[in-house]
Length: 285
Ligand code: GUN
Image 1: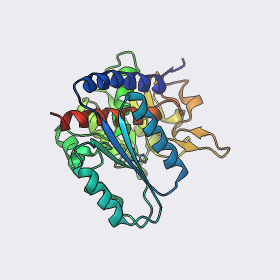
Image 2 (image 1 turned 45 degrees about the horizontal axis):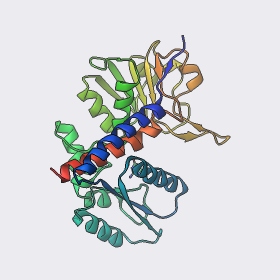
Image 3 (image 1 turned 30 degrees about the vertical axis):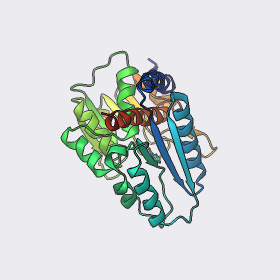
Image 4 (image 1 turned 90 degrees about the horizontal axis):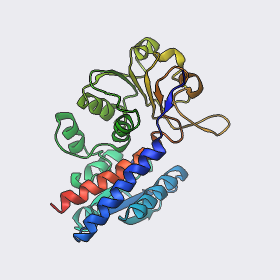
């Protein structure tokens, strides 16, 4: 048996097209959507991400404001800019691209963003809202995984399924576990200290790998017919982009699988765009 591929590129395109239509309708009511993107320093990967975010804004019809600051920018200067953007009525979303240079404390920066403009869903107010089941912005990558499961698996029902998430980061693993719980899955979070990882993973109907190490999930971790979502974006020794999952062997036993690239990756930006739209609705309610 060979797994069906969950096409993240197509699903993200579908979401962006839905947003494009809804944004045009908002514009007719005189409401515009504006995202402010802040990049500090010259990390090449971050530059690519930021460029892609601005391109997505353009495609959908959002305004984007771009602040590309030198690596030496002080934390104080960055906080001042965030404060100014917090106060601007014409700005719906504020995104500070991570990682930040070492002399800037990421937590302080995240906490400075107005939670109603925190389209990354990183602010503790939004994380807390997710925990207690209130409305709020959800971290984009895990939100994208939910959309892949809902739109890319021919009606596969998450409710009651055993879900094993490997990785416990604040951006992916932890919010992912809460979202799967919200979908009524039975959730296990595995991590670097987990004993018998293969055994734990083999229980899963749905495996979500968010480790950040190439190829650590092999066929020995996967039950026949499981749905496998690969959040990893790694570079192999020969420079190729690859996931946390050994795709070739796992795709022989999984029922559905996401490729890397073209799986979870494109969903992150689509969900960011969705959060920007929601932010504009909130600010114009
Ligand atoms: N760096 C890597 N992923 C992300 C993300 O989702 N948002 C931000 N702001 N920075 C990132």
